[in-house]
Length: 68
Image (cartoon, rainbow, N blue to C red; front, side, top):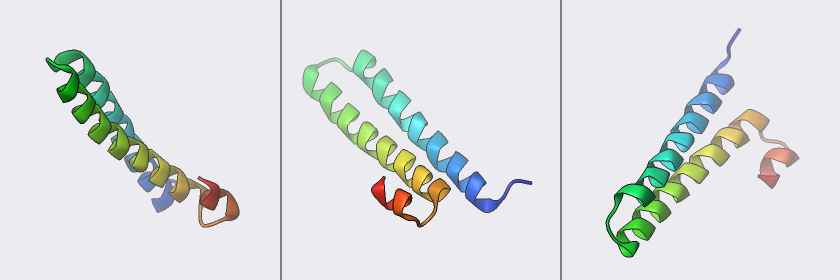
């Protein structure tokens, strides 16, 4: 049976991976250096934050969750 923590973990990690992929595509598609770095920094920061939040939800409020 799937509980709420598993669903939230999957949603946060999937959203984080989506933003990381969008940032990677932005490196290829955008025209100049400053546009590339701006778009990549914004999307990669949000993507990594979402992945880490998903991992903290998965691990729970333990010492290992705090280490993330």
